[in-house]
Image (cartoon, rainbow, N blue to C red; front, side):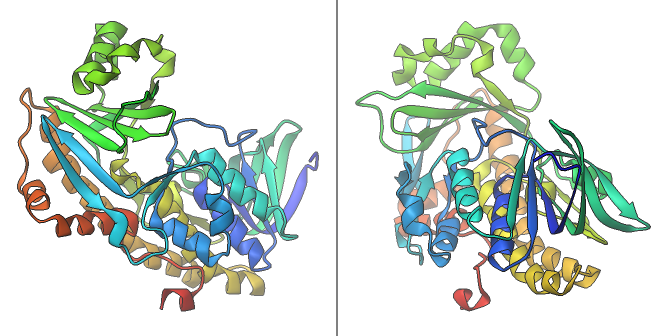
Length: 407
């Protein structure tokens, strides 16, 4: 599209889980919506691939679950951890009060392609790729649109509402001058993939030993691996050399010894700098932030994509009537934050507890950790494994496409 100026009732910056789901739901409600995505496609590796039961329930409410699950995915009904020589099952999703009592592992690009495919069938939906939001357009204190960089030049979009869903490094958030509360994280994560062989364990699990944590996600023909390291420790690891890094992986998962050579150079190891923060205020006149643009989550529990989807569902339900009538006022935008702030704060508080009481101690120790009291309780009374399953699988205050669906 070569147009230098467009207009929409709602313009969403960012085609990630929050932006695509919000765009789809608003268009489904008959709102003229334009989504801008800065990349040419959705193919970014090592993004959140966990589709939790709460998100699968939304797909059911939309009548899309059967088609969605027809796409290649893996279903995980329990999560476990190898702590030293002790294996422990920590979460059991098989008792959740949902239709899908499992986590679905699906590449994020497949999830986004699926939403985009169904959204494009709606007359009110437009998706513009290779369009990166660069600055906001303001009229006094009110945001009335934005400018975006495209291959054809600068695009100007006038909109009744601009939504920042452009991730933790949000241009929209920065341009709006919205202040964030930095909560901190003691770790970073190194992502990589290694082939999976017959005889490997079936279960998706974490491996915890002295000074290191390795999370391994079963993707059928390969393992998606995440090595948790101390904050800012990547350069020290690089200086030690790739051979030492491979040995570290083998120490945590010895059966990978015959394939760590697949890590041929550092380009195959991606650094995720972990940050946990949230905006003090998610909105200003004419503008709203959701998803990672409003609250960056720790990778603990893989809940980030699902919180983003929950934000989008709540925002669509609250915003749609106001957008039909015109531009939402501050009262409406405040309702979105009030609806989603409690689950955001509660989830981050839980993540910070795990980070500071568990992960920090493991990364700072040279000894194999013992089982903490909560883990000993999970081992003794299996019924307790339903609690972490509910916190991970459904979270705090799961959203529904309509208020009636949540009753």
